[in-house]
Length: 313
Image (cartoon, rainbow, N blue to C red; front, top):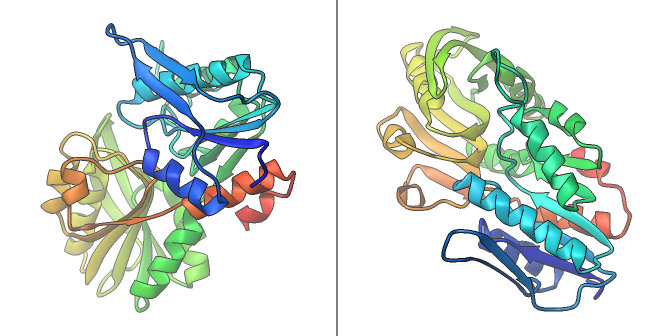
């Protein structure tokens, strides 16, 4: 890559930053991200970036607030170092579930984060599988919402060839499930559920034929895994032969791994937008695919002023 581009990484996902740089034939920029003794974020750019195109790779994954603050301070640092164009590469965009007022006197935190990124100095945002596509409208700067679907489809075609049914775990995910079912020429099913409160879901009934089928649940993220494991149980009770799942962002907080290990799910396919840590990294049911090639290609096209929309096909 040309010497006028630098890719910097925060502490949230260093392996992904390194993979992107390797694919682009470069090395991560020299940026030190640390904390003072009181917890304040400190950033030091140890090379000249004046007039360069800067891409900062940082997922806002747990600990979410810490990683978000790192990103904001890095953006301010490179802006004040006279960078030419600054792109925030956010493989997992936290706060995306707070995209509307779900009840009275609640914030729209996704909009707040969009404002923070722009004010901090981002000229554009590059992300993967936003929880809600309309969040792009919260920004007054360009947003490229890439999809992990091409990576997922390659794996699914190789391992799930026969009697496949793509299942949406809720009504809100039908469009996403249909986007998978169409190129795979698979049937589609929907699980109607009722969520009583945050992180707690109850499966109601299944719309579609899943008896003696290989079912693949498709979602954008897995947090506490309550939705997926309840859905897998319902599918098995409805006669499904095999139940697996895929998601772009493996948050896997709280009791998620315990639930997955004790569930009917045979394989959970995820990407490396969020690094697996602790028990999640040891879970034998989880298969990790890399989105580094997709992000690297998008960065290359943005830098060369090429078409990024071609990646959405």
